[in-house]
Image (cartoon, rainbow, N blue to C red; front, side, top):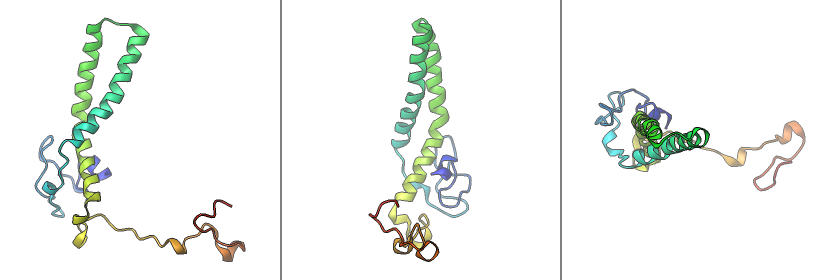
Length: 145
């Protein structure tokens, strides 16, 4: 998601996921990842509106409570702020959504196309080594000692 938030390829991190403001490139120029199979559709605008709404609305309410300006002043502040924040955040949110979709798509995981697989051997993991502390290692469900 971090790479997508920077508008970079989620697999290799190369810049160039977008050819325009919101137009997605066909493939990554470095690793060949097919961006057209990662469709974010309406999710990015939804998250953008959610984020911008949580910034602008409390700001306008605070201004209303503190200063009680005329409605035209609130509109003169609120509408441009909403438009600017929305247009500024939308491409970055779309990139992050595309990165999250890429990580969660199992069909991209074959032939090294998906995210790296992390293997955790939980049976060998313990918080206390029985050799060094003389205590038995913690097992799942034992609680903190």
